[in-house]
Amino acid sequence: MNNLFSQRLQSHFTQMSKYLKYVFNDFFVIALMFIIGGLGYQYSQFIKGLTPQLWWEKPILIIVFLLSITLIKVTTFAKQADYIFWMPKEKAFYNFFKKGLIYSSVIAIFVQVLIWFVTIPFFEKSVATTSVLDVIVLLITLIFLKIYVLNNQFLNNYHFTKKNFKILYQVIVPLITLIVFLYLNVFVSLMIALVMFVFSHFELRKLKEHSIDWKTVIANEESHENSLNRFFNMFTDVDNMQGIVKRRKALDGIFKWFNKDVYSLLYSRGLIRDKEISGLVFRLTILGGVLIALIDNQVVAIIVSLLFVYLIVFQLIPYFNNFNDNVFIAIYPIDGEQRIKSFINVIAKIMIIIVIIFFIASIISTNIIDSIELLVLLLIEYFVLIKIYVPNKIKKAQSNY
Image (cartoon, rainbow, N blue to C red):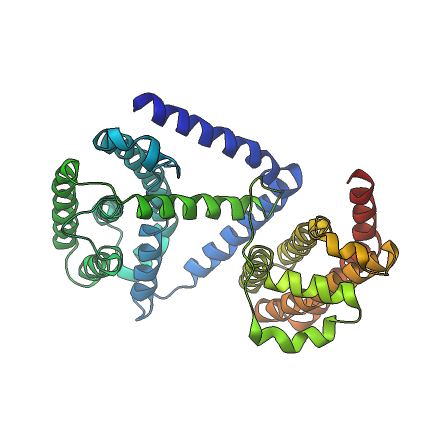
């Protein structure tokens, strides 16, 4: 089992390194530096102007810490075939899964420390303290709570008699502990977190006598892999990435705006109904809009908006060949040029909506003059992408298909 886990972990690292080189390309790294710098500057200005012990500060901290505690989930590296081929050694899989729990805990603690470090200035302002001890106790409490949550996620991988409810261990217990920490006594909350941490470890020891809930294990692992693949798919094509078609009846009204011909009908409905591509565009649009609304530095906001418009267009282009394997499109009495025009027309209408959203988001954080300047630059990029970049990329893809 040790060798099996090592092989799965190595395979995971190989996949990560394969796609991370596309994520952290030169263009994105430069943009990321501007984004981090701009957000860091805005955060420091926000902290400087913050009045200590306002009523909303502690609830914000509780929400941030609750989200951070649930951010990382247990990774088991289980495969669909494991419950068949390894059934005779099912009890030995406890050690295999335990190594996955340790790996997940190390990643989770690292992320938790990073979030804790970023929130220290806000924490000191909200509770009006400069005590180093309070800050350290906060970190220890958060780590205990995080390991407690991961242990309970691990417990749910088995047919355990005391099946844990997600709302209890992931929300209620951490919420009560954080409320005690911020409103009553830091050491009492530390003791609560420690007791729950120790209790969850004692529960883990009982699992060797129980059978594995393979359906839950495989579903959780596939969900974890799909989350990673969706992130990587923002930057490059991901192997074995399968979309899910979903009926979106509420959006039928907007199809009249798209459907000028048969290919416009095909691509517009395909893009919107495909859960993978529509979800990706939606997430990028929301993320970009939120970042633009939070950044009041015009230069950084322009860079972020231009970057996100490019990323969205870049992700939409491969969808042009989505129906190439469908034999029925061969009977369409329409030439290839019209197909390209229809696809570009669909992308153009989607992108003009996104440009308007980014423009509205910029009004929230900057004045109207700066927002108009951002809109002008977005429109310039829009016309360059739609008139030059997209047609060239499609024709190049067709020549290689």
